[in-house]
Image (tube, rainbow, N blue to C red; front, side, top):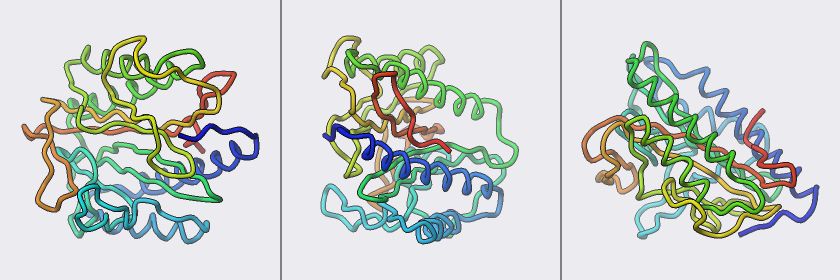
Length: 254
């Protein structure tokens, strides 16, 4: 786990986070029926090259020794929760797509995710997206000095379940800094006043994954793509934040 000790380090993390936000905004504008997830991936990689950044997902090692992840983005459609592999599959009107993206720049990593409606989307899917994004913001609000990590997790879980949805329990947010995945693990469920205390300089990637149905998930035969077990749709939002004396600061914004 990294603790940022200087303003220069925080500035570098902000630069990485800002680029992630810019690329996700760039991709979001290009999400429409007929666009393939491989096109989105290629555009993300082009932006990385343009700005001298490394796409940290590409060739990321599999935790069970399978083939590394082949894409620069994770592109997860409808019932796909996370880690969707970019391909020639084209988006259809009414889909929702979660795009997860991260870069390494100047020695620090930024990581963020958004869920985007494709064309005309059903009201229930728009509501799923809205609740997931709001749950992220409620979790971030609890990421303050002296609070415990469980307060972040509980704020997400409570808000999501109040709206009749479920948080994915098999995957979690994480510490972030010079590496994409650092301690601590940040579940999207938990008890208030549990877990480690939060300190100034900690940098976290908070990322609720929210299912319209059951929280249970399964991995497809490609060994990467995680889908809901019951076939319900899923949404995913993520920000990289820094805990400061003035409260949580979102780094993955333009």
